[in-house]
Each structure stands twice: as structure tokens, then as C-alpha cells.
Length: 267
Image 1 (cartoon, rainbow, N blue to C red):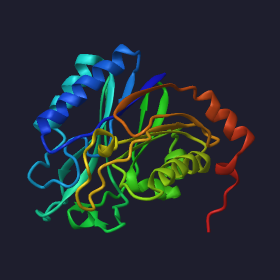
Image 2 (cartoon, rainbow, N blue to C red):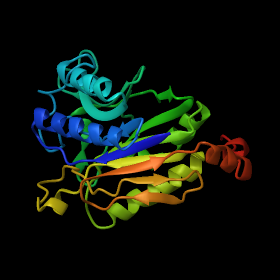
Image 3 (spheres, rainbow, N blue to C red):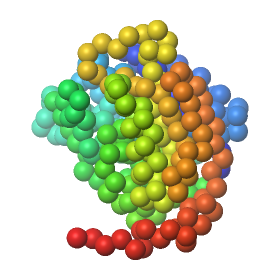
């Protein structure tokens, strides 16, 4: 299966961000991809208000993404914001939408980014349940940004059958942060013996845009990692489209050679 990681830089304007989805989805399909992954906060970049644009999974923004997936005959994974828990009118959920080719799924980010001077929990309700989906006989697990620091989610996805873990992010910049992102992607692949597809927002600084405040707006370096933790391909900080041909036989081989899932103990 050929996949693509769409490393884009989104802004405040929802319509402009949808244009990016349309453009990169068309380019991914033209390049032979069956599935294209967009970053966290594809709907609207962090550092902007979220409550006023949150909508359900059948709302106009998600419906347009669904239409693009149908037009291009491709599965799209993209970050959006949905309404928060019932009775909490002041928060949203940080949601991954998965749609296209008969696939419909969504995942609400479980681990909220309350670190490095940013408090995501001030505006976002945490999800509670891991999510996997199956496409072309391959099971994918879902994770969002800060989730990558928590190995148990990735091994849980593997226990639920995931051979591939998708991570969508808008990674915060700062000293050593790009190196941490790469390290964590490699570690989570090795922990779970899954292929890891880690797609982040591009680095605004690569386009001459200086970050404002503590909002995590991306460092780029989207990466594809083997189930033994080897970096197979990686982008730099600039926007771009990364293609990869997935071979899940490498997952079976890794789990035979290094059966960490079978050997681990739960305490």
C-alpha cells in the first residue's frame, strides 16, 4: 500500500486550510497513494480560537474533507476540532477524522499537551479510548502529538491488531524538540513493533514566519519508521509530501525476530 504524509502549515482561515487539503490530497493520489495523512490542527492552527470553529463529524468542514476523499478516491486522515463533552460548553475535543474508500473513524486525543508552558487542557477535553481502523486488510492505530510520549497507547493499538501507528502532530518548537520528535517516533515503533507514520505541521520559520507565544505550531520532520525503529524516510522543516510504500510483512518479521509484545509482563 502506498501512503503519503502531507506536511502542511495551516493558519486561522478554515477555507484556506481546506484548499491545502484539496491540493495535497490530489497530489497524493496522483502519486499513487491510497491513504494520505495530514497533521493535527489541519482545521485551524493552534494559537487561534478553537471553540468558535468546533463542529461535529457531520459538520461542513468535515463534510468537505469527506467529499475530497470521495473525489480523489483516497483515505484522508486529518486533525480537526469537535465539540467538547456534553455539559462543558467551554472546551473542544482534538479529533482525528478518518474518511474515504469506505472507511469512517475518529479518534479524540487522550494525552493533552500540558507542558513547555502550554496548557492544552484549558481548552480541550481529553479522549478516553484508543481507536484503530482497517483498510485494505491492514489495521492502523491512531495517536495525536503528545500521545507519542506515552508507549502504552502504541502497544495497546498493537494489541488491538495495529500493524501501523499513525501520529498526527503540531509539535512545539524549541531547543532539541525536533530531535525528541524523531527519537520518540523511533521508540514507539520499536515498543510496538509497528510501522510508524508520523506527520507533523511544517515549521513556520521555514517560510519566514516567526512563532508567536507558546502555541505549538510545528517543526516539520514528518517521518516513516520501520517496526525495528529505523528511519525509512523523513522530510525537513518545509512543507512537502512524503510517499512511502508500506510492506506489513516487515511487521510480521520484526515480531518474529523481536517478540517484545509477546514477552512483556504487565505489573
